[in-house]
Image 1 (cartoon, rainbow, N blue to C red):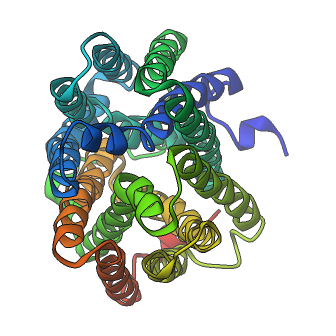
Image 2 (image 1 turned 180 degrees about the horizontal axis):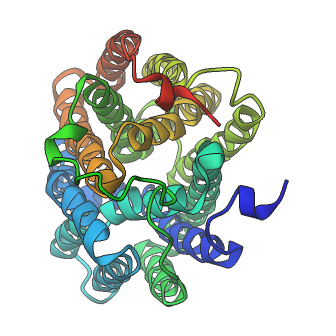
Length: 397
């Protein structure tokens, strides 16, 4: 199989984007076991931490469609570079200006700039592969995403446990700066998809990206990100409360999730034609619901490890399928806008997850956020069974 039939850009361009994404995800991984303990150590309650975590989700609801719109009009490279610079500034604030206000500012910077990972980086990867290999390209993206998240969370947990929060913040600031430097080497990918449209075809109206199928996909995205943020924001607190684990052990659990996700993505890629894309979304939500039930019942490291493994399997099944379907259901001229709107659903989940978890934790105890999320994920899996996109969008070739 020749590269020309698979790739629409040079391999070096994809490597540069994946390296920048990897650096950013290592940052998020390193902060995941650190910030909850750091903030509660400053006197905040779990509910207040949930509210603080919701700041970024609220801003992402609005920022991601804007980044998608900018990507359609200015290209992907320049918005991506601006966002990396903004995040690097926010990370250095955590180093140079310790305290709760710096965390608040970091959450604001995250809300404005982090959404570029969803809309621009994923769009870059999709545009870089021919339609027949887009699922593979997104799975490769998620492998890098998960592997770097695993490394970052493990290193961040150990740095916090043995050297304190400042060491973790310096580590993340250095990675954020590296992401800026790497991004300087990106080149602009070709338009999506490869130009085959009829020249006389008029631009599609913006509202054409909204239909029953894309709304169901949006619901699936919202629920997956509620799941993600409940776990990401509160796993370190759950591990300490229920299993007596410290931040370094919680970092290992975050890393285990990411490594399991890598393995499941690799396995699923071998059977990508055996399961339709809509079925992968529905099954992913169902498996994620089971994982959340296990979180709610776990009382040991082993129980939490089983939960993160099931959670990772659900993500590996549903996430690449969602993004490919969004691209195939969208007019080519509105792909960035469509992916940005889909990202807005994800970011409602980013907002709702910490708020839901913080409130339920305070009202009903540590198990409640996970049990309620399990019910919501189960309902989402049933709704997704009604996903009936066009036959063209279901084809993998």
